[in-house]
Length: 494
Ligand code: NAD
Image 1 (tube, rainbow, N blue to C red):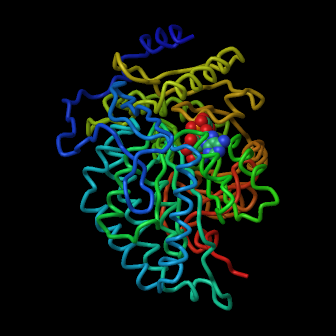
Image 2: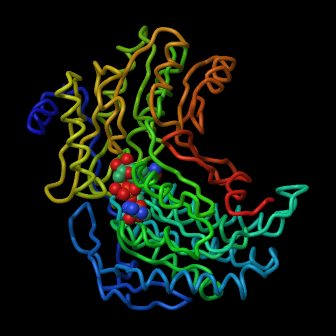
Image 3: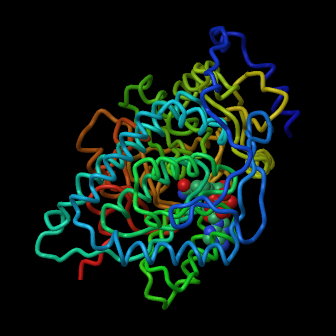
């Protein structure tokens, strides 16, 4: 199958060829990599009691970047105890205006060290430097700034209630936005007065660990945030610990369901941000060139490793051909390759395991009878790569129209009427996000009301802001992150 797609890419018409760019690699010499990393417990970096370490690599080169600790149950217990002590003695009692100062400080240090964080994020995760530089790091800082503002105004955020912190929050995050997801989790938890045990994903631990250094630089009291690296077993131990009061998880639906089963009846508060299979709907009256940019941003941003990615393009039948033609032409100009190059649009796939998943699903699409087209581009020899791909002739029953691929793969379906568009958009077990492209405001409002998605973007896609709540329905999880709704998840409002 891979060979077939390769041949097809070679046969792509010359008119699809992009401009030539000279390499423009970002320097990495200002990022000091440590050979090994401990766990942040009780304000100190400690060796894991488990005695175990694992390697973390650069997915664009397969080079080992560092060794990190694999926290075992004893480490988890120590971290939860440290968080509990910090909650009882310091953080849970601290006036909101004082907590806010720490959050502001963290935000400002992140801004000061932005370049270092962007480069490290790209090295460890494979995403293009222009995304980590312009999206991940600034948004992470914005989340701390925004929540710093709320820390002393919780009574105003929830008038008539007496908002109180919950205690210790266990937070498990994925690998697609490692620093940003850490910020989404930490900032509201801390603003609300909780302490935290955070577990980053096993393939991308380095920016979370460096964020631990920022917390120390900001002189955050010891034990307020504890950072444990490790894989699924570490995450399972963190969320199941009996002294945890709140669990916040972002990752796959399968693991989210397992966590929900573990926590059932425990009284712990839970929020789940899981997968998605978003419909990006384009009507015939939409500005097509603008829509093409939105489609590309929707599915090829961050190699499609985005839970709210617009992975199903629903296009009105009358414009399907010209739109797909424009899309292919635009895809042919995407620059795929070295994520540290400032001109790169699509970087490396995050891990071998994720590449295998993408290849398996793409093969199923071909076997089902859908037609794949891939952007003609040369891929580097080492590392994990997948060409931006679009599938046409897709039926709703195909796995590529149903399952989250979490890669740079778009499935195109068509519709004739708004009702059919809504029906197809909602024909998924997920419900995280959606997009609508049309000239008519009334149609946007109508569709936004009828689509079962937590976020609906109109004539844009993948817009994020700390003030705006984000989250899903059904198999995309429950609870919101961002805005007042996100804060509520870390407070007792009874
Ligand atoms: P995952 O759910 O296995 O991992 C996410 C996080 O959960 C990681 O930190 C992992 O170590 C941890 N984890 C794994 N098993 C756990 C358990 N039993 N208890 C507690 N924590 C556990 O996701 P993945 O395997 O890295 O990716 C698989 C799929 O998940 C992807 O293909 C994609 O569909 C989806 N995904 C979604 C998001 C999102 O933002 N919604 C992010 C990453 C992955």
